[in-house]
Length: 386
Ligand SMILES: C[S@@+](CC[C@H](N)C(=O)[O-])C[C@H]1O[C@@H](n2cnc3c(N)ncnc32)[C@H](O)[C@@H]1O
Image (cartoon, rainbow, N blue to C red):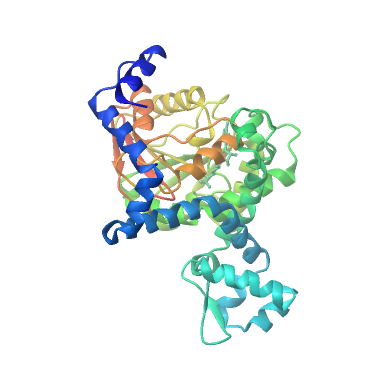
């Protein structure tokens, strides 16, 4: 389409007339999608490497679902755990995985290509650069296994986007259907709470590395799950009094854990819903870890304003969760979290700026980002009541 046609077409669709920048971008898009451009780019030594790199990147996007299933197969076969302590030959791996040598070779070659395992010598395999963290972390392996539920829901991405299917993810997370916990199966509660607990290690490390909790007297962790975070805090800052609030069946699991850990005198566990119940009072810091993104704006707004009302003057809220990458930064997990939260039900991935606006709207006078070493797992925002 010529620029004039483009302008007319935009006007006929009720859009404003494109400016020079949009017209230039449209011209460039037409040029770089033409076969002539491809032939020129690949034949020119200066542009060939860019073309090759883009082609490889696009191929990886297209093949991503195969890559994730190779990873899942290795996790299910405990390949990373056995390679953590020893290198094995193809034959030994095949025996361990109870698989034919030919099938094992296919999986091993794929895993080597993805740097999950690496070839050492002529017929010996060890952990690859990307397999080592999986071997090190049972929470990560549990999350990879759990992603099979999302994989199922994404079989027809359009049906998921158009709300034409009942995602399995919604059944996995019972609180997506409301906060009345009557009739919830104990097994389901234990399963999601265990997944959260096992995958919380990295988030806990990020929190402890990024903020000085010793400046506070009492902390309330809302939606605290089985209490891994308050337990870590209890050990790190012995002067702190701690509170955890979660839905009653989850709170019961947390209470049991605190009892076992011998910290029940310092950690009070409250069973209740932050939607329908009042928040426990008395804390000068509230932590909200991987909670807001599960809920729609109406629920998050109401929760933030309850927190604001409960806090004393000078009190703070520290919110930690994965966030949409701000403009200008490389979006690492955005596509994953957008679809994960869509399949889950009612929440969404928000940018730091969106969360900041919600916090300011709730009354907080200042909201600042807190930098942390690994923003892929979680980003932190600190809000203060004057
Ligand atoms: C995604 S998990 C995060 C758990 C923990 N903070 C972590 O990072 O591992 C969300 C937690 O919020 C709790 N939750 C959901 N709705 C709630 C509500 N209305 N009131 C209290 N807790 C709730 C869930 O039971 C779950 O433990």
